Image (cartoon, rainbow, N blue to C red; front, side):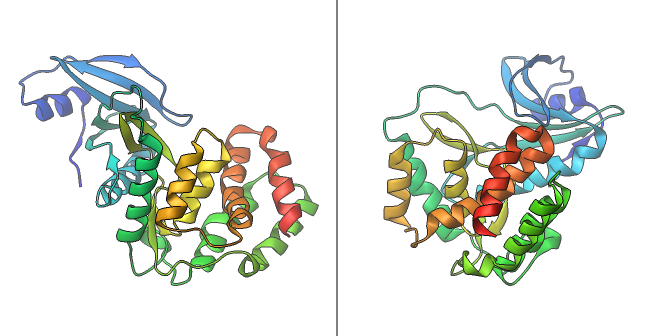
Length: 271
């Protein structure tokens, strides 16, 4: 595990091997949960994420996910250090430059994602204290049920949600073995994909492909290549809707009622 410092300047000085560091922090876009900064010091550029002190464990989970994903065929942002000071928790990572994707970006991304799903596996589904031996049990109890219980749904939709939970075996298929998934599909790129911001766990590789569909932006060659390399069994689109319900519910909880109609449509269709 990375070193946790009590001062940002000390952490950067230690990493760069200098006696003192006076970093310049510039705010950049970096998601909806954390503050994000470009850190410039002595000609070196780093990336920093900042949140409240109690979110340090979230940064540690992210770091563990990146390190696990780095065992596969995909490149990941390299985590460098944690900082916990009086006001904030920080995660320092290498800076990833963005730029024009390579011509084979989407096919290369799909090939390496499929290879990661095939090669980085475990004996149980889940992550840390949520291990289950059965994929559908894990997805029901640790992914979908907690979001259904927390989301602001009316009583009818809640009842339908419970009915859907009881019917998951009618739709979902288990993988041959638990596969490491990114879980929140964020990438950065200059040339080829670099994975960032994971919510990693051992599950079914289909969840990553499903999430790629949810908000768009992935070229059709990505899906064609993944299917050619790894294969997607019949009924994938129905399974994708159910897998993505988890993310829609999470967005409903975090960002409000604009996501409610999409959640209701999926629940009503499959309950």
